[in-house]
Amino acid sequence: MRFEDKALAFSCAGDWLYGVVSVPEQPARRGVLIVVGGPQYRAGSHRQFVLLARQLAAAGVPAMRFDYRGMGDSEGDPRDFTSIGDDLQAALDQFFAAVPGMAEVALWGLCDGASAPLCQASLDRRVTGLVLLNPWVRTEHGIAKTTLKHYYRSRLLEPELWRKILQGQFDYVRAAKSFVALVSSAFRSGRSRPAASDAPISLPLPERMGAGLASFRGKVLLIVSGADLTGQEFLDMAAASPSWRRLLETPRVTRHDLPGADHTCSRRAWRDQVALWTSDWVRSW
Image 1 (cartoon, one colour):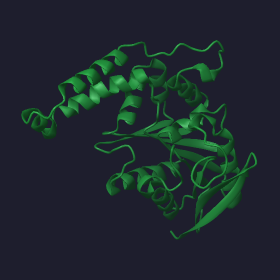
Image 2 (cartoon, helix red, strand yellow; image 1 turned 60 degrees about the vertical axis):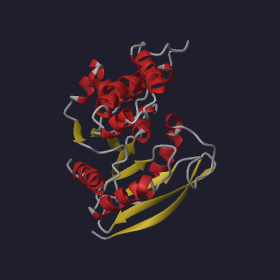
Image 3 (cartoon, rainbow, N blue to C red; image 1 turned 45 degrees about the horizontal axis):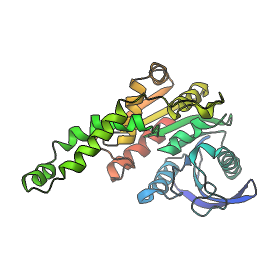
């Protein structure tokens, strides 16, 4: 289907934000708002978000991508993914204004762009779906366990490692220090000591995200890259948590695994598969 890219400028708390909406000739009633992970801007690595938005629009799904405050072309002070609730709300309002026939939206995010919606106090009722690609649940304990489990296993099979060892170029002292530090972190308690306040922000990131997902009543598409430590850390965390296992086993959650893919799905085949899964899913209900 033919579509048109339109530049957007809109206000958020006194700052101007900038984005692009891709509008099909016959827009579906459900669109996709791409939430950029940081530090990143609306084009994405290797134009990932540009290509995703255009592939969705070609399938009839309106798509918008934007820079939140402090990123890309947008004004304002830089901020992290836990504090972009106002930016998301402003972008949603602009998206609906730009596509008058649209009735609801799915938020699409990579890395901490996937984590951001689950860290907000509440989501707009017009948000009926979430697409989570390699969600960021980073803790020191979690990444240490994931690195030991996934990285070192594959590292032992790399010819380059054994070439360095045989040629005397391998730094045993540095490798040993790194390994000991990882083991120490991996077997340390995985839960941070909470602050004096019982506010949700005092909880570790995985628990805050779990609470956000539990309160969200819409549908969820989870996509995990097979060769990405961020994605594998998420799966390891979820497998070790009864509450997360229950959340991901509900019928409203659809999961796809992408074997061999890296964090940003940088190859065309991976990128196209993610776009196809997204467009099929967002039109499936």
